[in-house]
Length: 175
View (tube, rainbow, N blue to C red):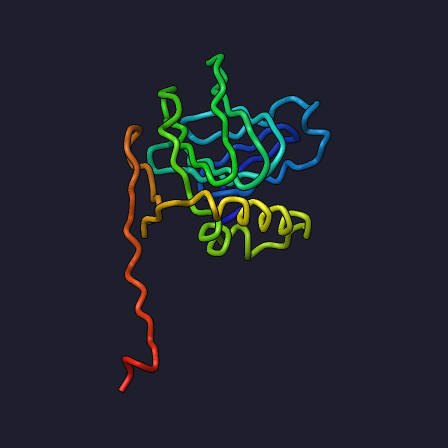
């Protein structure tokens, strides 16, 4: 949990604010009831095995990012599922407006910068799986954008924030 306000039960998590990393890689979860993640204005049913990041948005919705494994996400009042794989981001829109468009993220950048991954103790096997999915994604990334997906301030939009240019200090250009 990162700067999170939450309530927890065996089969559900209610996030009022902040973000969390859900590590659900045990084989037993495939036979268990779905795990529910709730935000102020949404509830998402998570079925599958792997790990995800979830973050509450200003709009009352949620940002969900697949890290490892495979999940099926469903809104409780809907019959259809949305799939979530490593490196994929889905916004869960508030007020039963469904899921936002699929956004693909660079796992190498995400994993190397995410505080929820680096600032808390975790199982070594998670590190191994994160390294594996990162290596698997590298040849699939054909185009990169220097931007980061920000907050969702309204139910239908989200911010795309450009990253600052990298200044490289080399011997050739230093006096």
